[in-house]
Length: 136
Image: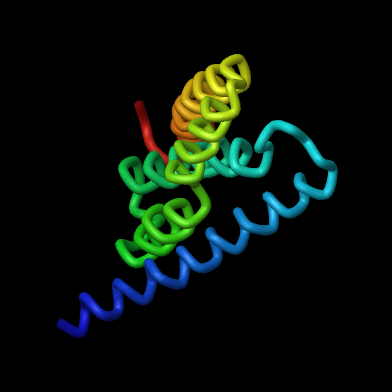
């Protein structure tokens, strides 16, 4: 039971930092009055890149402890990425009759987030391969 509480604290602390980071990113872009929710968009793409890096490090090495993975992947990236906000903002475009914005936002977010995740995995594989950390 102690371990569950401790692990929950790691996730919670990471989630707090991720959520605050997302909020500050959103505020930054609202300052410039973009009609596109750039803060949410970038949070999703960057979060997917980071989680790709974390997962690749975690599966290819022993550099990250289970606690670090919980803090970074489940906590920070879970708080940073905003699929619920993404769905809400897409539905707002649809409700406002802005179908081009809705479809652009939807497809760009999903496509670039997946590409960022794969890129994170590839980056770590290349670094580890050419940095001499492990073989193919």
